[in-house]
Amino acid sequence: MNPVALTTLKQIAAAIGVHTSTVSRALDPQKRHLVADDVAERITHVAQSLGYQPNRIATSLRTGRSQLVGVLLPDIANPVFAPILSGIAEALATQNYSPIVADAGNDSSQQIAFVDNLLNQRVDGIILATVSRDDDVVGHCLDRGLPVVLVNRFEFRDRVSSIVSDDELGMQLAVDHLVSNGHRHIGHLSGPLSTSTGLLRRDGFSRAMAHHNLPIHVEEASHFTRDAGVAPARALLAGTDGITAIVAANDLLALGTFDAMRMLGLRCPDDISVVGHNDMPLVDLISPPLTTIRIEHREMGRGAAKLLLKEINERDAAVQHVILQPELIVRASTTPLRMLSEIEKY
Image (tube, rainbow, N blue to C red; front, side, top):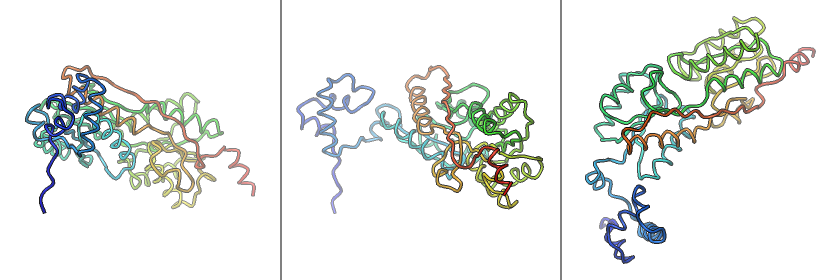
């Protein structure tokens, strides 16, 4: 079987009757504005009909860029990263970039090894969803002149751009919701405090509780996973007298809370109301459907890619921090405290 011949810029130019350089500019998102709109649209239409695919190797040799971006995740199995990746890929595609995704875990030495592998593949920049509050990987990237943007987390040294959700506001929404439903003894199952998400959500919970003059009960999970949430959730439930609600730092920890409640013979929301954080896919289908804080993860991914593309194209671009607004999504895992009292009568 003969290999399929690749469509060239020259063939597209011949089909339309324009110069090859015009076709090249029309198919380059950064130069398309140099071509009249009607001509650019004809070129794009013909290129698509002929199945044209850009030659990345030739483009890299000509521009000195690979058109590749590395994306480091701490846990690719975590469902929140699917919409983030989708948003990243969508925004990168507008400038003919593609992502290379690495499941880098939480060990900084392993993450640095992944960065070095990506550098060997000549990525033009990197998006990190792995960072701790004072992150070695960020410094490693900057020392090598690699453009970096953080997504979903940020570091406290303010060295690179980031896009995150307003974690403290999310906790305030969760606590205010529970307080408005009569809850006064509320616990917080925090994520690891070495991360910005763990620390800021813990601090946001504490401030919201202090605003309502309520006692603060916190247990820390070692990781943002379901399994890691079980033991600290049990500690909250067993060690806090009269607790009627738990705010978890993410939805997986909320699921760990459900597991701990089953072990202790407790029911949600009849005995304990539970609030998650993220609104990851499918939490509306579990039993009971999870009340949670919705984060616009797809928009977060798009924003991270746009920030990185700006860094790549403008090496002296100023550091920017984008903060997205979260939203409370009320479902059946929370209930007014008066309902609990009525249930206890029967």
